[in-house]
Image (cartoon, rainbow, N blue to C red; front, side, top):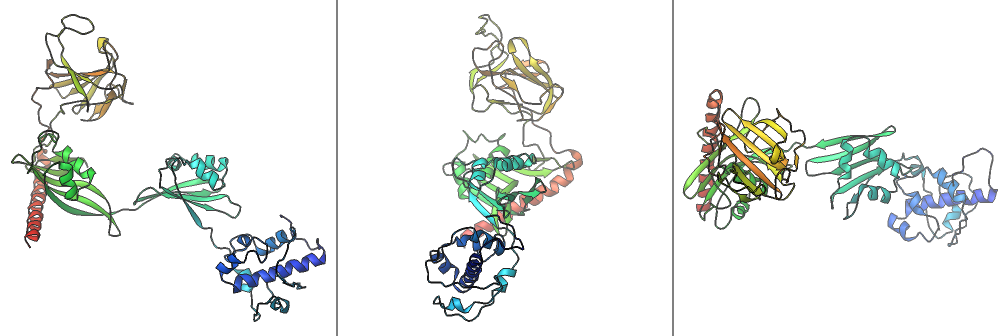
Length: 485
């Protein structure tokens, strides 16, 4: 292999004659016999016909010829290949007819003159245990290429996060070097790498889906999730609905048979195929005979929130519990004996027992006034909420990254993680709630409502709210009429 062309002959004349004859025979084989037959007759001429595909996508035929001469060729068929000094541009020689193939002279010029088409994409499916390194090895690509791709940009590292069943396409050049790689992340996003000189360039193709408005309604027989599923709501939309009405309805304990809901929501489509859902635009939830409303409104600053149909706030200024899935291990108690100090010391908050590392959330919007050690409280965060309220979170194992005094936090934002720093018998969160400087029981204090729609936005909000509520009525009526029919 790998000989270069030269004007002076390098091989015995008999070799050259045999080789040019082989080339002519092969060209006829490839033109006359269907591809499947060529596959079947590989044994006829013991050459790897893979190398000589019709597409001529491999190196030029003259290079193949060079390669063939350097190997000993055994013919198993009585093919008498005599001298023909021209290469692939000749017509079929009479000698070939003796091989039992009755042919008219065939011009094989098109095969030789067709330009090599662009390299094809080859697709592989990620199997359990596959990493990008394994996929590269299987594709015959070096560790250096892998390194060059992964380190070409921060975005390119997205290719290392593979999931089982994901398809990754590779495109190689003639030497087997990587030209490009692409993978569809979901129905809307495809990531891609293309060779750019000595490096690789990352790109991302994002399809903008068409967004339409859909209506769904349902009545609860056993569970909210089952009723929502039957109504055609995704898990994501059901969670959205539970969060929107979460201040008014306790979805864990207060749902009753016969409760009902109506929802207007965004649905995303690409080429008439549903690819996901967006936001709930308006909803009504009837719980134990009382109906609650919600309207999504985006203000002039681009901030979106849900309000009741009359413009009052859906949400309270505070959520009741700073940790989910925690057990109350000690309540607010002005005359409690301290478990570590063994003295009567007022317990000015609530202790939530939870595993180390459980996220702790800010219970309301506010500004951080303290982050750091605070005596027996250990690692502590204190948040001021306007002029009236202040909350304290103690015994943290660590703080959320980037949190510091002066940071603004929003309700539900993670501020730290449960631990047992300071005077603590085990991992728990100690939570305090102050009103005008006085400690109150966080579990029983009447929580204030959040601000209503600002006066400057009220007219625009009421126009939207009235439209959406009318749309809920109309859609519901239409659906009832269809059921009656």
